[in-house]
Length: 237
Ligand SMILES: *Cc1c(COP(=O)(O)O)cnc(C)c1O
Image (spheres, rainbow, N blue to C red):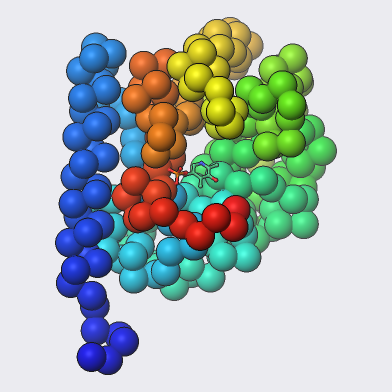
């Protein structure tokens, strides 16, 4: 069979996985007393090819996420006809901001003040305002990215002070091996504190394949789910 013939069984697998994840989200919302329409599902497509993105779009997915610009930029360009919202969720380097600004609808991973100047320049070059989240590190042992909780207000203020950026809220990744509910329990307070200084913030990005229920229980508005929809990735990243 020629390689370019769409693989029907792959499409069915994605359809089945997506339905299961959507059911998990609905169940978690029921238990939390939340409206499922208040929770956006971002399918993280890193390591997976363009035709999987096309399958997701055909199944009604509107939001997709990527963590490396080298992979995301060509994929977003190839899928431009799908009019998806691309979320940048990976560690951000200053020299990638210009590229990310061309396709990212929401940048989840602003974790230091020094990125703000690069993002401002990038937004100006792209001719648009960039929506940004402050990534907070919930890991005492750091290293997975994220501002220390004490530094979140400073990063938020820097974003909000740039006319080229729009502060939207907070993003977090649960620490490896920790109880996600305990870790995510800090997020509503951090978001509330941010909202007192910046009343417009409305996004809490938390929850992945393994811990989306805990995130919904802690008020997440955006879930970033990869492997539960597309399958487990080679353990590279
Ligand atoms: C890969 C990734 C995800 C998705 O993780 P899964 O465990 O595959 O659901 C979510 N957030 C970030 C920042 C990621 O890098």
